[in-house]
View 1: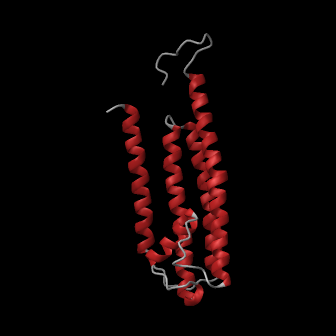
View 2: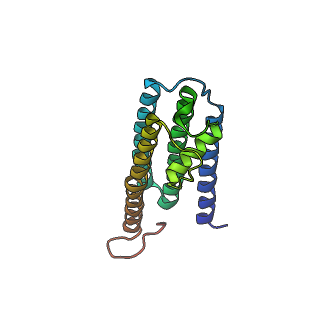
View 3: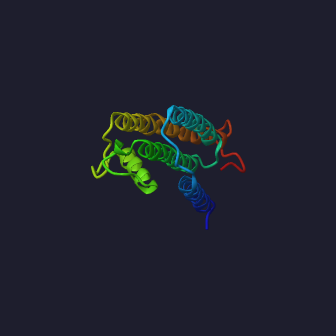
Length: 182
């Protein structure tokens, strides 16, 4: 197996293990408290942490020998975190105000609803009924647009920059290949 394939396999495995650990953590968290101002602050703080995580990941992408793989891995983890943060908020909201959604939300339902909002599929089987639930779904839609638009664009730019730097380092001043360059 070539080095590139091995790195792709390792990056895929890391992304899968990370996403699986996040989902397992979601199902193990105690979600029996109420949706309060503390929940809102936690969600805002979580979004800020995701933004910092993305900034760090973009920096790491520019330094990676396989920037494309690193970007895919980073995006997989980031999307998982965002979907699960909102799933937690939806579950807590449903626990506090059971009429917030068209049906009661289990953890699976909360994750499912968050994922349908993230993907903009919106099957319509679970809908936000209350004003706070609709506001929360609107916030998730906004975060999703920023994640897909801005973060993905920054990651693509970081991959291009890393490849450009690697290409520059792989050649010497005369245009010949530097020994040992990737």
